[in-house]
Image (tube, rainbow, N blue to C red; front, side, top):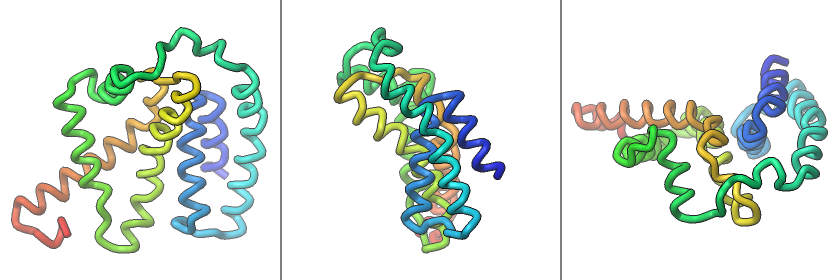
Length: 172
């Protein structure tokens, strides 16, 4: 119930949260989260509750985002760098640590990492895909993915530290 309410509230508060909810829903569909009667009801209720906002966004066209510049490598690099206050070095370090943190060591860890990976990657993948039609590349839209990026980067730093410190099993 709390997850369902939080998901719907997030989508109505920040449209890009819909991509986070979508990504986590995909991990559920793939069986990376338990499929119980309660989870089926929750996922169904979330889907039904966000239909009106999805119709609104689809029907409003590009008027609300017409001020965003066209899709380009420059715009993409600005968005990707915005997670690190525009610091290219810090952004590269964050992304590298997150990629290290994505590497699961067993099936249980896949189940723990998959929703966080979906939380991080789905808004970016969807944002880039949509931007091929109408640009939505604006750093503040992707703020919804920042907590997941930081969690994965922290996991990667811990794994890297364990590997450097001699605990090779932690890095495997």
